[in-house]
Image (cartoon, rainbow, N blue to C red; front, side):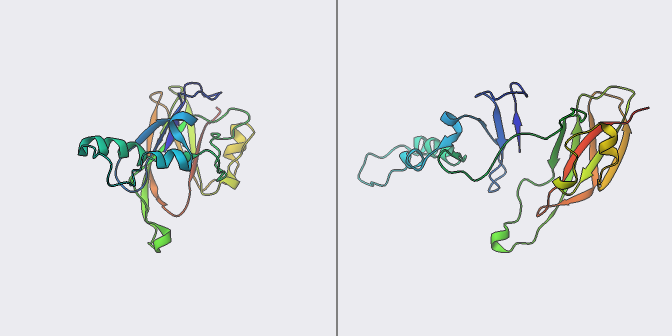
Length: 194
């Protein structure tokens, strides 16, 4: 779902990753480092007891042991091609944007479940009160500029544009256009020059 950085310009082992597993309405939060979030087959299996003759743990102890295992992990020696780099904005013209959606789970395409529509709430931070901004929505990362000034974004192939004047340093926008769970949506916010 997101990352909470100690310093947005460099990795810190105390950076937090926040995510859902899509099986239950529960948010997980872990430090993004090998010791706490990384695993191998051996370390995952360490918590599993295959021998029924061993001493039994109390239900509470067993539940606590498996809770952390159920939270997921990143494999240390397998590369699935995942990179957490943040957005690419070489000229630093976009403002911080956060998206939350109305559903915590999604249909599973493996079981041929139909996609659903979700409502998106976009929060923009670090605004200057009294200035005008454009919140741009894209349906493909290929259309999102990676460099240029605000005009490069305003002249790009966005799908929708929402203009607003900042009356606070944060702005919350409920997008009237639904987000299909089988698709993707990208938002960028830029200052509209006078």
